[in-house]
Length: 332
Image (tube, rainbow, N blue to C red; front, side):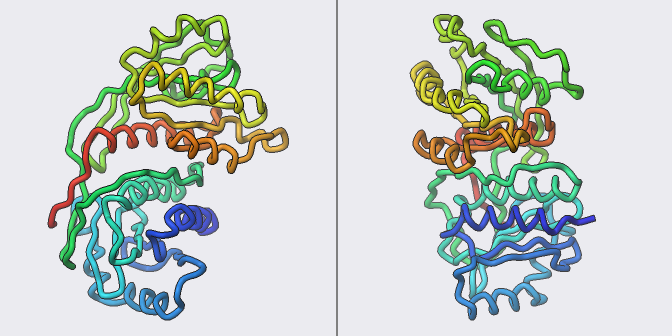
């Protein structure tokens, strides 16, 4: 059963993050029935009416048709705006309605990740409603109304990933829940470093990522030896516990340590243990503000929830892929 309430929560988060790039977001069934849709609250009513009418036209319904297309992200323009759409699992299509001047390369990562979130919601899985910001700038943008596909080069990537953060913030649980099907209940604080591997596929792009994950001990005693673990790292999580403000304050030291060792490392800030609602001390807004200060992304997790943990690693992998594999546009 479709959970329209959760889908609307996600759409509101998308609209907030892309306030200057989106008119509205629609979720359609494969046969083009509207499951749900929302527009920006401050949008011109006349334009909104035109866009609603546009989505009901035969031209758009025939264009937004996955039965005759390969899986991917597609775009075409109309007189009232640009339409970008993607399959969101077997039961939905995700449609972004954008201004004509919107750059599809800059919007592309948002619809990719949002489509995965829609698919997960429709499968009854937990997802984070936080939409991380991507600072992608591109001069490439289709200028005509023809259909275009947005794609990445196919391939297999290898990532050494470091996990930094104070002791007992949940780093080891995060990794074990990602790597293993069953979580180990016997928690032990990491002694120095714990190394695990995991392969993840991105079937939409025929891309895969091999993760080598270095879970570094957070105790002060290990600080002198951690530099050796950073060698060759290409990405990482900085983790804090939302119930312990001191772990949030110490993120600045972990950020300095990571970027000093690897200046071009791709980092994501994680606020962990969000399931402990009554004990929470650090808000999502505080986490986002700190991430913006360091120009990195922020997401929240519950290390005991495999769905959300998998999504965190998928976001990290996709962020890395975007950084090292340019987005391309071609006519379809």
